[in-house]
Length: 497
Image 1 (cartoon, helix red, strand yellow):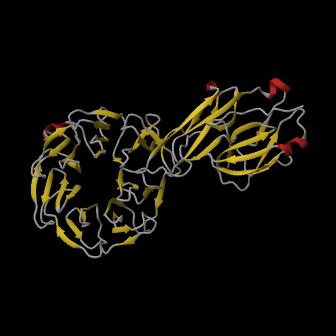
Image 2: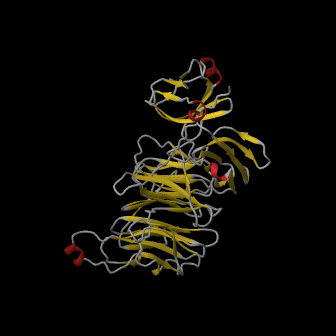
Image 3: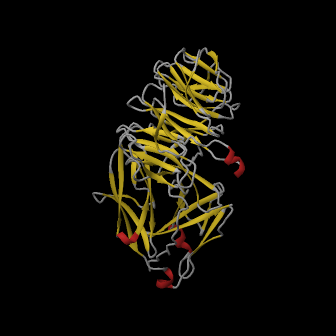
């Protein structure tokens, strides 16, 4: 009599959308413990400001070289002529020979340097309280905007596609109540604009909102990030050149935003699952101008506060207070495609991983049967069987549609009065299989076992011997054990100590 193995349903703690890592970690020299900024030149070289000076890469981070500048640098920008400008609090360095030699200039203004922008050979520096401008490579400076408001800073400087300059302003009200009453908080944060080459600035948009990052897409849609204030925090969007704004992300701390040439938006979402729980960070992206967002799950999920799009159209992520640097595994400027999934029958289950992707990425689809159903296989739009594994990796060259097929199951208890168990769990090296009842020892040799990590990657596949599975080769962690017996499947989460 044919035996049916009881299906034990499981749920993945994290739904991975990518078969490969979206982020690749760039190994910086061991003596560097801070990555502060990244900039690119027209040759495709990327320059990185660190606590040990400026390093650079000619091959998108595969190899790292040191420039002759080894002084701590907080900001770095490169102009259209490939001149490099590197900034510390009280001095500036510039190089017109790709970093082989540097000219040092003092910065004669007080305060902390918060942001920099170079337009041709004109330099703008934003500090706490002021914006300064130099038209002679830093030999002299003029003050083009200032305030006396307490704890005010020019958090970001940005050039729009029409040539106007924008400044994201940030204000904190801190201290005891009596101190707050005695301090000047008159100047409101928001976005300030200059339409005369930076000679004068005035409030322009999002008055009262602390702005830390600004970006623009090819349709001239503007995006502004706010990471402070319960009612204010989130990501704002304007489709009419700043006249009106709406939130496309609400109630989340958004510290940075970047737009790829294909208008795909990228940012980091920071959140807690409970009020006092741990802080989680996950990269999200939008293919529809911020209307909907897709999480990017990767084995590497860096906590960063800055994004930078290189001239080779790779996306860099870094934290100004840490030594790590990440780069997207492929350029983010390519064509986009969609992965659509149909569940058959619709009530049989659900699938994780469908949505929009970049051509060249690998999408991982994971089927989750509903109670009373088991997963059967994946089929193409033409009905061809693609796989009977619960996870399916698709290397994407364009739009694709697949079907996840499920079927109704009956439990072993209902059919044979038998039980099926896998033990011990957690385990050390070996897992035992016990089907009980009429299940013969010889039948175990017909069971195919597969082990996947939680991203769906298959780590092991073999035949069960004497109802024991040797998993001593696995590292400690959480895995999914899949058994196939006479066309029937079981999936169970197992833990190795």
